[in-house]
Length: 196
Image (tube, rainbow, N blue to C red):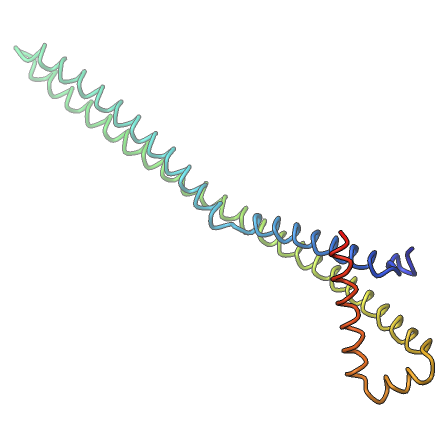
């Protein structure tokens, strides 16, 4: 049976509701921790970009080596009376090396841009996750305040329902009465657990 505000009046239902709220909060925190682990995600993205850049550089090196090999074979074939052709082959090899440098610089620039984009995206996501966490924490705090207020109201109402001698004992020795109630509650809880 639930009371005002959807708060259970039965102690067991209240405990179940609190446990469910704790689990939901734990799941939310776990999801947020995963989202917030930006450094690990940024490292993975940087390693991926680095690996791709390395592959492109290896490919360019292979192409340069291939072209240089072809130029060398051609130069050997024409070496008999083609000093001019040998000079042209050297010029061509230098051009290809220059192109390879330009290509490598372009790849490095693209990799740097990608890392910047990933870092920017990560920063935006961290901000969104932080905002979401603030909202969730505020909701949980509001809900806890409502439950606490209702519990205070119920406790006050319960004290008013006590017979006058019990109220007098509660006013004169509140710590002893609370300790007795806690002891009885623990005893009931232990008995209930054994019965499971």
